[in-house]
Amino acid sequence: MPSLIPKIESQLASLPVPIALQLPDGRTVAQPGSRVTLAFTDWASLAKLAARQIGAIGEAYVEGRVQIDGAMRDLTDAAAGLLPGNPAETDTGWWSRLLRRAKSRGSHTLGKDAAQIEFHYDVSDDFYALWLDPRRVYSCAYYRSEDLTLAQAQEAKLDHICRKLMLKPGERYLDVGSGWGGLLLWAAEHYGVDATGITLSKNQHAHVQRLIEEKGLQGRVRVELRDYRLLDTAKPFDKISSVGMFEHVGRANMPTYFKHIHDLLAPGGLVMNHGITSGRLDYQQLGAGMGDFIEKYIFPGGELLHVTQVLRDMAGAGLEMVDTENLRPHYARTLWAWSDALEAQLEDARAVLCRTSTQPERAERILRAYRLYLAGSAMSFERGWISLHQMLATRPDGKVEGGPMRGAQSVYPFTRDFLYK
Image (cartoon, rainbow, N blue to C red; front, top):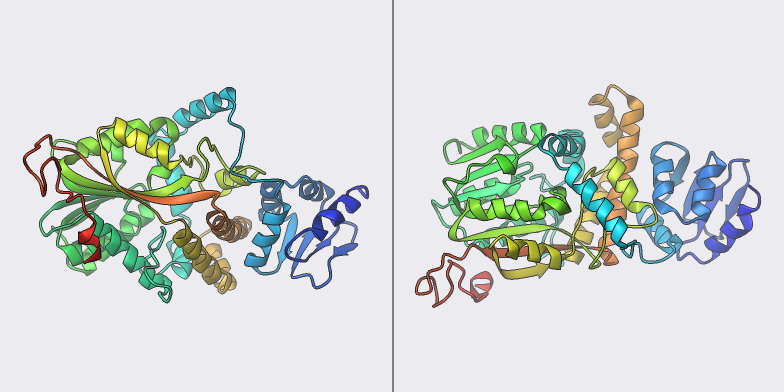
């Protein structure tokens, strides 16, 4: 493979961050002042680097065929320089779209969705606790002001959602995909709602059950280990939130998902859909192998849609969008906060994963995958390859004379004054 070396040297010279490569034969190719070193044990992985297949290099790192020495922020800057183009601009041919839709339908049965959620969220509660905020809010924070800490920004996000939903004491409130209970409990404690959360993660379910008991919220707050498709629509909720959930639903199932949300929502009520969206109209997954890496190691079955497609599916289900907000840079900052926290505790994280896994090799693979996932995702949000939207919608009740103003057909006031006071 000596013929690769001139090509790789040319690539390295154009990078914004100087890096060094240790080759399988012991030689070193380096730029002056290198801040990142990649050590290769096989020529096949080096060939992937020459082909600018960033996802394949990530896989080689997770599997131990490449070692990385350097800061994650420098690594992502170098990776961005190695990309052949915008990774959000992937194949959009009709045959590719047809195949992906067929795969989407087959990947999101009740059993498969439960297994996919367990794969990601039931890794180890203690592992997540190392780098999330104390409430373990695993979604985009809201940096209302520049000086907020991660914990403060997460509380600001929880309150931002509750205020958008205009939660009031005694209302029946549903949180779809309630995670470790941050939003569910915040809504109950600060807004007095009767709160129900659902999750497919056994670890998260057990954690929230403990918190409900510790806080004495039994009878007013409950969490169920249940798929959204199995919720009874006979007694609808006044307000609904879905945070970081619909990314797991699947493109093919999105109309059905929003139709069920519609049926779970009382006429005139509000629903908040907060989630990751694509950065391109006909986006399928990140190119250069990055999407394949996330599918294999982080979110099997995860699919992203452009915000326009999400809003179309919501409208098709009978939900009227009344407010949409883009929080993309907020998620980049959130992910860097998570990444920095994990990087500062790598040995502790390794020890935690080893305690919860019977295979030390698997623990190391998980740690390496998350290092790349957090930093790579931060880079993707910064550069606009993926985005984050909060979409507030109503289920119109058909009563033109009712509501806060004529024609509102819901509790939504059709002004934003309530958010800013």
